[in-house]
Length: 164
Image (cartoon, rainbow, N blue to C red; front, side, top):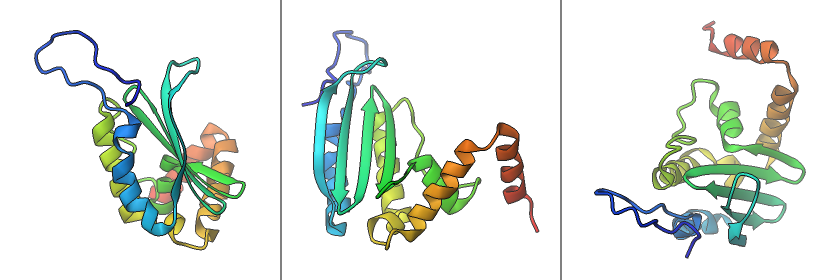
């Protein structure tokens, strides 16, 4: 059971928040065939932003990390020392116009998790089954983007969006 417990509000249509632990079986069905196993899971972590849940799936030097705070799901990938979040992975893989379903649904953890699992199945084979070189390259590019000035990042997006 997660720390996300319903409150006594009595409002019509109230839906109790769903915790990360409620979705781990869905993720395990997708990630275990690729050799990943749940390494850690916790449901009562505290931070300055309030309580959150986290889970880490691992295979060799690869880690898939998930965090859920209230209804906001975050996902990170690492291979060795290279790491990036899901939005960076998708931007490097698909470009600025994307096509990925997650991140989205910040107010609905169930829909966010469903979108993430869809992306994982459809778009993350480099991480799940690849040799790691592509994801390491994505992480290096994402790190360079994070270090660039705001104007440099805008110019790079503009170049990628221009036809020709």
